[in-house]
Length: 123
Image (cartoon, rainbow, N blue to C red; front, top):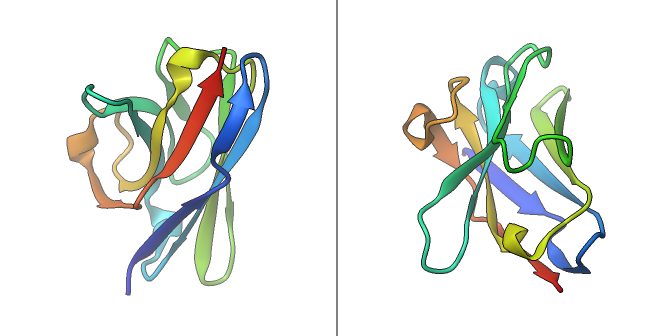
């Protein structure tokens, strides 16, 4: 059974930090690129950042460059993906989704998705 489970969301003040985690299992996710997307109320889902299957290459949206960092760890039966978010801003408030697929900034390139975790940044 394929599962992508996000955790680590919550409420934080502007300027603060959060670390999101995603546990991916049920496939050989070590062979997949992993990405983070987000969706704010009333807005479309947007790309945040991605890491390729080797872990050596990343892509990031301009809005998060220098503030957010993606990383991953391969375990025997799963992949853990992390999103370290620093210097958070109120506009970062959204539901954050973990996804697995090809190395791209397009949501259409990702086949598997988690259920999302809420991040709220207060001003």
